[in-house]
Image (cartoon, rainbow, N blue to C red; front, side):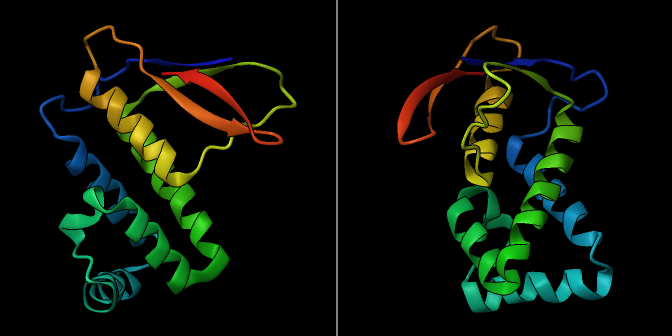
Length: 144
């Protein structure tokens, strides 16, 4: 089973760092909640969770945990929105090679880390392997 990522960066500034892309995606996702929510949300992350906006790319697990504590199960929808915004920014595409009934265990943190690896290696024609746990604890290798 493989996941293939193709490069389509023509509409994106290739000089940007991955951290900038992630922060922009978080900003855009938070903006969908409204400016009256976005600003207090960043303040809450900084004051209650010691997670300033600029640290989000380096503390993904803490960021995800903080969102869950703030929004409960609805945090997953916000994480999906952040992933969609990131996907739009780097314009990558993928193709799932495997059974259609099998859904890989792809969390927000795994997705961001996969995209980080792809982003940092773009233009190098490098394929990155990673492991994913699927159904009944079976581990499978994936590629990006």
